[in-house]
Length: 321
Image: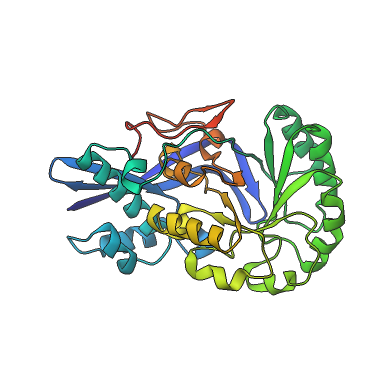
């Protein structure tokens, strides 16, 4: 088996800002795994929040043995970006070898389109209202918050898009006090979900707190090993391939989370259609689908995912799987 890793950069359509900083481009790693006449590929987004860099992820992949399976990969690399790209490339390789689509190999029903949220980046209330107005026709808007002064931003987005469903992503930016102050207003403003209001290391404060709308674990949930620590704090888990370390663990996390009574959100880092493609399988029937990464780009892969009024569609075989 031969593994090739390349660095790719995709320009964003506009500056993207969250509570931890801003960016103007998506820097990703593209992994190609070749065996005989077949080649599969996958994409990951190294994330500084988890101490990942392009170089550190490349080094993890370079340390893999010459031969391994998708199952043994689970023990060779930890959950994270490196394992994600390799795991997804192996799924694609298996599909090429078998001449089948990925959902057939995974024993899943044929997937269909899912409505996806569209993300508005953190800005002034006036700018966020303008963003909301420009995207008011979208069914679900996800707004990036995470400061002590977010109430005017939330009010502004609701004014700009009075008919859209709203979900909030605080990116660990609130304190327990800020969340407690905002919580009573969430239902009034039509918020349907709050993602990671508190830092992952401080989320015990959620135990016993009023949750007028469902609270979703993002940075607090990586893989199945995360689930025991979420009890009493969260109602929903956000499954991202770059956190689970690939589709193999993500499917297992989805099954176990649902069995334990959690609802599921399927999210993404800012990457190309190749990064989103495997996640469309996880999104089937999810409470929230947030796979808008390609919509935030000024450029994408040659055979991108299709986004239309029905939502984000599963990938063509030419793209992945």
